[in-house]
Amino acid sequence: MTPAKPAMPRVRTTFISDVHLGFRGCQTDYLLAFLNQLDTEQLVLVGDIIDLWSLKRSMYWPSSHEEVLRTILRLARNGTRVIYVPGNHDEGFRELCGAQIEGIEIRRDFIHATADGRRYLVLHGDDFDGAVKFAGWLKNLGEQLYDFVLWAGRGVQAVRHRFGFGYWSLATWIKEQVPDARRYIDRFEHAAAHAAIRHGLDGVICGHIHRPGIRDVDGVRYCNDGDWVEHCSALIEDRNGRLALMYYTGEVGLAPLLEALPGVLSPAQLDAAA
Ligand SMILES: [Mn+2]
Image 1 (cartoon, rainbow, N blue to C red):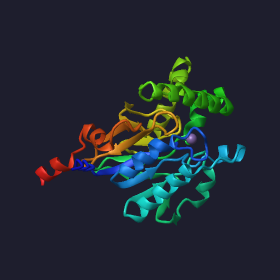
Image 2 (cartoon, rainbow, N blue to C red):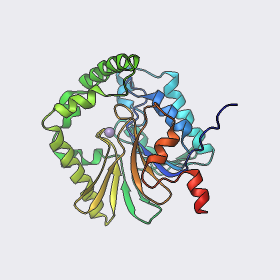
Image 3 (tube, rainbow, N blue to C red):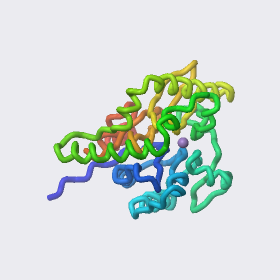
Image 4 (cartoon, helix red, strand yellow):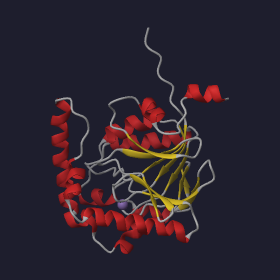
């Protein structure tokens, strides 16, 4: 007898960004495993889903990248509300803001109301590059060097995997060694938080800097859903409106990870509460 598949907790909203399809650094295996297990009422794509800059530099479009798009379209067909907020690497899609294509709503930004009534500004985050007034490590390092570091990191990861070590990102480690990195992140977080304050909202949800995090900044909540190049992270809203970050690098099934998030009820707990 095969053991019963653990039931997947249903979450209210899943935010992901900075997937960078068309770029070699995209962790499609983990992302596909994540999306194929996920049971979410809403999926919000917070920008840089397709990396048009990278595709312009060199055409790279393996079937796994195509499969990510197919999986997202399938979720939309099967009743998940999908909202796409283009970022700077997929800026071309901003011309389609306001349109609905294959059931996917395309928006420049929008206000997300959580189940407990809090209101968050959702946008990619490149809007704050000007306010940060600091080129940031991505530009300092240069796109080409970032590519190289991610490539080298995959080599390191392959060796680690062979010897049974878990996922680890060379690019993240390098950025942690850059003294100005923390200053850049602080400025970005403050600029994002102040956009929420200006609009009289409870918080902001964004991506862009490839740095997942949830923090209270100047009285509002700053949430960054991270990326699928280094961190393989998502921001999850449970049925009660609580927001939590999760990381998925495929070592275990998704169900136990979701159940371990604060506030996410397992199907059994939901039954007991009904
Ligand atoms: Mn971006």
